Image (tube, rainbow, N blue to C red; front, side, top):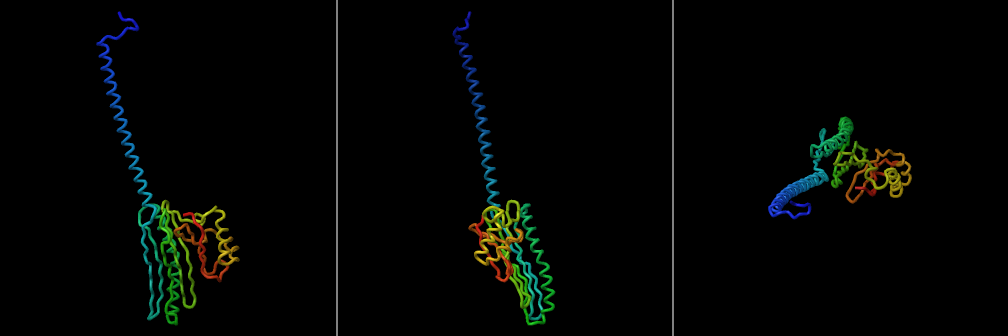
Length: 254
């Protein structure tokens, strides 16, 4: 009769050993399955990270084309020319469509200039002024780090009188947002206008300070250049008029 503290017999030890071996095999199989699952999760994570990185890289720079929207009217040696260089981004995402729609709206704003030009040509075609025009030329000044910026040079001549000015359109590629000058000039948003006014007063004309401080942010034209530069543009009659076109360069965020 076995007591509580008695030593197991040989058959009992063999039985226990066999049970332990089965238990170890079972644990080993479970460990293999866990390791396999971990490897699969790790591989999936690696692939997911790679795909996300590729998407970001693809969105960091815009693919685009610039289309010449031109119309010419002639009479003997007289000519009236309308030109708008229309940039259009390539792609079908909601952000790209939003940007293209915004640029198209700017293009449509010039239709009135085109009508006036061609109507005026009928008056001038027998005068000594042989060439009148409205030209809006575009170039990309910034296309990296998820942003694209277009500089437009708009000029017109109507026989004895004309004007040239620069302006810009800048967009964030991630969501198609049209950037404001507050979004891109370095510093607090509330102090951007004062910074621009101070710089203009120092570099161009001091009286322009008050004029700029009264401007709406939406009326301040600009475009972006590499090296964290924001080029703020003023036409020939602003601020306070008579100082020609001027561009001041501000420190930027992008």
